[in-house]
Image 1 (cartoon, rainbow, N blue to C red):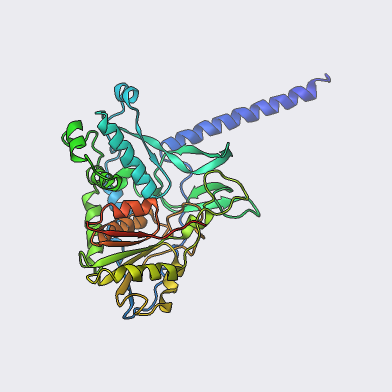
Image 2 (cartoon, rainbow, N blue to C red):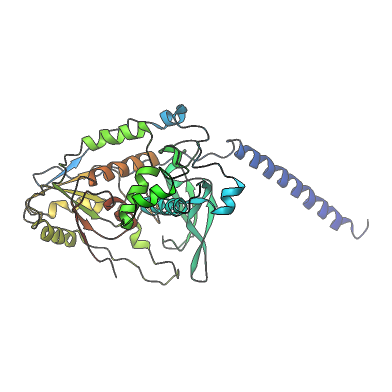
Length: 404
C-alpha cells in the first residue's frame, strides 16, 4: 500500500463525518425554525407556598388558581404574529433605529422599553420593537464589563429557568455557564404580546401632543404615563388581575407598602465582575424595615393596613417575632405565593412558581394594589421605581440604605 493510504483514509472519514454533521445541523435548524426539534423540558415542581397562621397582626391573602390559562392564550386570543409597533422599514431603521427588549427583571425591562419608546416618540419617529431581545446573563467578562447575547424570547413569556454552574463554583452572576428554560412558553410569540396589546407605533395625538402632555413630569411620572399608553393588557389578562385585586383588603388612601427585597441581591457583585469582588448590597433584617415603618406610620394615622411585598420566604417566617407595637397597631397583609429562600433561585431568576404567567399576574396584581397606597418603605430598585410611579399623590417614600 502507498504510505499515504492511511492518511488519505483518515481524511476521508473526517470529511464524511463533517458532511453528516453539517446535514444534521441543517435539519436541526429547519426543525427548530418550524417549531419542532428539541422542546423545553417539563418544569420542575413549583416551590411550596409558605404562609404563617393568620393572627390579629398579620394575614396571608390567597388569590386562588389562575383562571386564565396558557391554553386560552394560545387558543387564538393572541395573534400568531402580533406586531410589536410599526413594521420594520428601511426608513425608520435608518432614521432612529429600533427599540430593544431586555431580559433582566420586570422593573429594568419595562423602564428600558418605556424610556426608549419615549425617546423615539419625542423625535417624531415611528417605533418598531426589535426581536430577538438582549439576554440578561453574561457570557464572559471583557474589560470590566459584561457581554450579552441575543435570544428570541422575553423571559417573562417563556418560563422557569434552570441555571447550570461549573463544578465547585459558587452560584453568582460570574460563573453561571448556561441557562435552560424548562417550561413551555406562555404564548407562541414568546414576547410582550403574550400579555399586552399591540404597542402603538406613534404617541397618542402625535409628537407635539405627547411632548406637551409630559412637560415637566418627573421620570417616574413620565414612565407611568408611557406605561398607560404602551403596555395595555389583553382583556382576559386584565379581568384576571382585577379578580385578584378584589381579594386584597386594602382601602384606597389607607395603606402603606413595605417592600422587603432580597433574593439575588446577595449575588450582585457589580458590573466590574471579579471573582473576589465584594457584594454590592447588604441583606437588611426585617426588624430594620419594621423600625423604619413604625417611625413613618406614626405620622400617618389614616393608615390601617401594611401591604408587605417580599421575594424571600424567610421574611414570612419572621413575622411571628413581631408585636402589635412593632406594627404601630396596624395589620400586615401579604400575598400567599411561591417564593425562593434567599438567593437560592440564582441570578435574575424571577420564577419560583415555575410559571411565567403566574409571576406576571402576581406583579400586575401587586402594581394595582400599590396604587391604592400613599406610603412606601423599602429600598431603591427598578421594581420599586415601577411600582411607586403609579401611587397616587401625595405620597411619602422612605428608602433604607443597602450599601455594604
